Image (cartoon, rainbow, N blue to C red):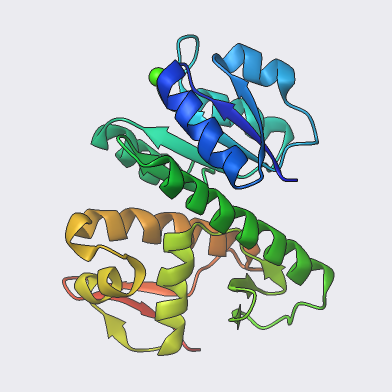
Length: 227
Ligand code: CA
């Protein structure tokens, strides 16, 4: 049974989430403060759900603490758009976020999706990963760069997969929003820019010369270099 660390100080939100997650056969350990969460954290967890507004430390700082010793997937619960900007801008290593108010079932669905991605990228790493500059395993929904599986958020994955369908073609921000967001109307151009920025950082980390294949075409959009 996948084990989830839930860090949320609002009792009613926590209770609803615990109910939804346990119904979906997840084991949940609930902490109400970051301190409590760090004390409980060990190797047995599969994912952490972090409220951004915690009494003793922000969910962002807690994520940074967790990242010092673990690659545990993280789902943020945010209350404000300004917090979403931080998640997108700071490359905190969060895997996804949901904005309050949310339905507990939606959160459970996100958790399932993140765990599916995490386990398929593990499988791909164990199998032989082709050493192509970029390789898309559509079944596993993973992309590797120079033999290393990229740990991507859902949006980063969909953006890169879209760019890879036609290297050399310029995609406008609107076209990328259409391809990578379920509700393109709710996202903005700068959302694309923030995701592209974090995607490029991840690609550069895997490239021998520290370059990345995404090119910004000023005033037009983005394209993937084919050479
Ligand atoms: Ca809170």
